[in-house]
Length: 176
Picture 1 (cartoon, rainbow, N blue to C red):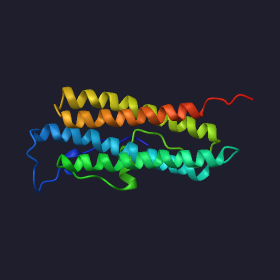
Picture 2 (cartoon, rainbow, N blue to C red):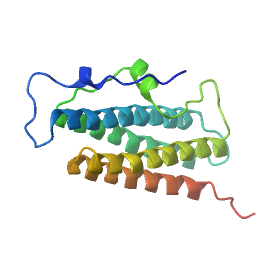
Picture 3 (tube, rainbow, N blue to C red):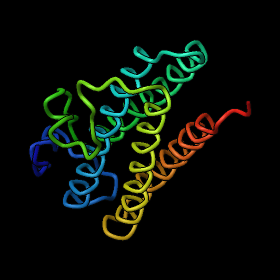
């Protein structure tokens, strides 16, 4: 599937422009960043839930609970990103078709990997998100001069760094 370009102008809420010191063109750029992030976060949530529902093995109970905690954290991020878009005068997309159309993360339809591979796949998604966020942090500061979103993205990056660390810690082989 080819990633389509996001038409941000259709996502700007025309009723009442927020007067928050960010020109519309800059807000459009930030809303594009946040909308793509929303898509990535939603796909990550779905992937984490799929693994939560399908994990098996000797560590089932512990991993089932761990993955639930992970998807609850990602679900909270999804809501925060959507609310940030709205606070900037944007409208949020909200269909699975749109999320898949604009995500930068990879899904694994039809695949039911072992627990270790599930954790590795999630780790890859979190690390990809961290790399994307690092670029977005620079862009919101240097190009769009939106320090509020810059700070917001830094906080999200830190959450993903912690989740990635937890996944890496789970993947360490147990001594026999």
